Each structure stands twice: as C-alpha cells, then as structure tokens.
Length: 240
Image (cartoon, rainbow, N blue to C red; front, side, top):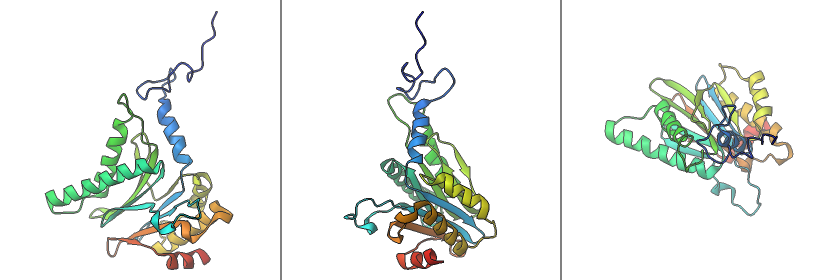
C-alpha cells in the first residue's frame, strides 16, 4: 500500500488559497518566517509620545547610509516601519500615504491611526484568499497620535493587527522582546524609551552596531508631529 506523502510534496504550499489537511495556509506561514529574517524594528509607546527605532542593516560599505530609509512618514502625525521584504513594505506604506491624503482632502481633517492600520491589513488579508497572488512578506509597525490618543500597532502577513505598548519585529525579535518585557514601563518618557531601544539594538547587533545603520523617529504628545532624529542625537543616546 502506498504511503501518504508529506503535505509539502502533495502541493499544499503551492497555492495560497489551499488549506493543508491540518488547517494551515503554508504560504502565509512562510511569509511569517520571511519577517523573522528581516532587519530589526522596535516600537515603544510612552507617556509623552511614541518611538520607532530600526536597524537599516547596511551590508555593503559602498552604500551611502543616508540613502537608506527604514522609517516612512504616512502623515504629519503618523509614522511606520517594517521588517521582511522591504519592496512589499514600500507598496503598502505608499498606499497608506495616499489614503491619508485622500482623507485630508475629503474631510479636511487628519486620518486616525487605526484607519491606516485597517487599510493596510485589508490589503494583506485579500492576498491570503485570492488565487494567483502571494502574501505580503512583511510586518509593519504603525505609530502615531490622533484625537483619541497615542497608538502603536503591529500588523503581520495574515492581515491581523494588534495594539502594543512595546514590540519588536525582525531578526532580533526573541532577544529584544525579553528585554522589553523586563524593562518597559508605562511611565517611560520618550527619552527613556529611546535609550531602551538603543540599548536593545546594541545588545542584539553586538559588534555590528553602529549609529550609521540606525533610523529613529518620534511622535511627541506635545506637538503631535513626526520628528526624525539625526546621528548626533543617536550617538549621545548610544553612549548612555
């Protein structure tokens, strides 16, 4: 009698719309593994704002560091970053920028953070149930401040999103997540959160750590606007 073949050999991972016999969408699971191989990105919500700090992972010394942008401004009050296939992220975040501008033109007001997150996740979810497509191989962190409060959201390739106080995506996820669980406090200020994020990246990257490969942005509660941090500020934070 012929032995049953493994799920992969039977073709359950060849089509995004096909469930395996144990109820899994294997292509989506592969997309999640892609995210874990991406460069590290950390988000921390503070009492006076929200912080994003990312590793640009510059692997070629001939690349000009300032030409690599890991953090994208969606609107004046919303910022985002990603881990995984960055070309996928670019498509999603540029779409989010258009959505934010359409809302501003239509309603003469700023879009709320959750609406941006839902729009990103709706497109991700469509790509998990449509033949001929593949899932977006990227997770995003979306941070911002609107009329209802300060927010930090994480989306994953399935189209699911969660709101976080502090989170990390990418290759350093396991190690940095442990640090955040131990050291994060809801009473942290933006400056304290930046120090924690830099400390976490230094530990994760070890000898490869360099301020040149770090991108950081803040949305402060006072102004409600995105502020990018230059290398001078990051160097001071890295020394503390």
